[in-house]
Length: 420
Image (cartoon, rainbow, N blue to C red; front, side, top):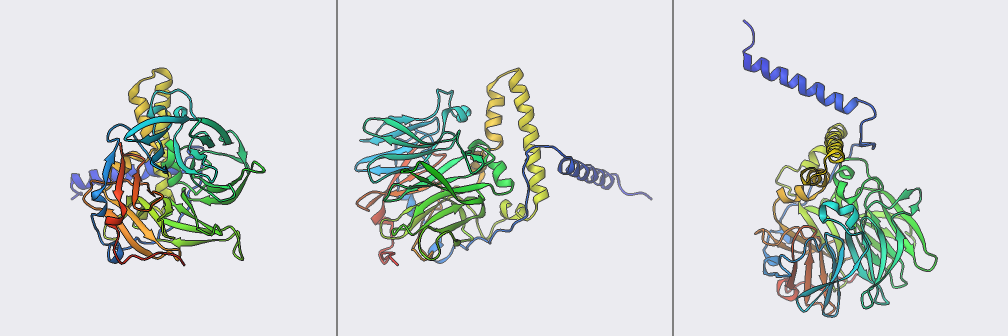
């Protein structure tokens, strides 16, 4: 007596899927043209102690609700807030109103045309009052926000150590004017971030010297390096390595100059921008959560390069098909599909809406967390404290508003200054 038909059917499906898997994985020459290496992730910290779920961020108030999209990074000057938006504009927010102060990209049709629009990400004021901005598609710029004059510091057309800038992300500026910034990938643009996360690390940490106009690669082969924050004494700097759920420390001066070490690992979310907490320590924004008591897809596929290669190749095949259709018949459906095929926004939208910010001292010890586990405030990429240290502003790559929060009211009363 033979096997039941359902069993035979399932066996046949399993064989077909296995054959298809290995054809896609082993067939030579298929894009994307990158390597896939095995790695492991440190398990995420449990949400207990300083990380216990709370709703401190739920008291935040929206600014420009529904009027803007994607204010990922924020810089404050007096009563003015500056940020970059999806669509390519750098704006100033004052008195509840927004006005454009700069744009580095070309005229475009909106976010589906992101590579043409440009995407301003990290921004900071330097000691001379100029706004330094990293645009993911166009490079590094200096903006006089009063005259709206723009100067290109490093163009994405330039080749740096054999590679063009593909995804300029966040930055910090030293007291001498040196700009430290991340190029999150040397292979893929921001729109195709998922390919970088699936493949081998190719990101870099860079330094631009305004005196010599030269750019130096300080670190390479980082897995989507993101947020940047100098220590108060400027002897070292923190760098978010988003795909590895950790923060690195790189020494610029002293006996450890040129060395890197892990500052924080096993984070309960994807680290994005890092900023001063106004009292000697740092705020680290976790743009997407990762829980110790839940299955994480990232943890599953990290040690399986063949699985990641299969997924990446399927995505590339779909993208090539969409490009062919678009070349024959341009239409919004294929444009939308192409935009989202490698973008992180769809993934962010299916993850739990959990606003999460860590507060740490200079030793890498977590001293507090600001959260909103209710889901009202989520996808926070940066928290910026104003000059008085009483108010903070929250940015996001996906939200349609800026959040404002009374920092004094949500901090633990016993929290002390984090100077080491």
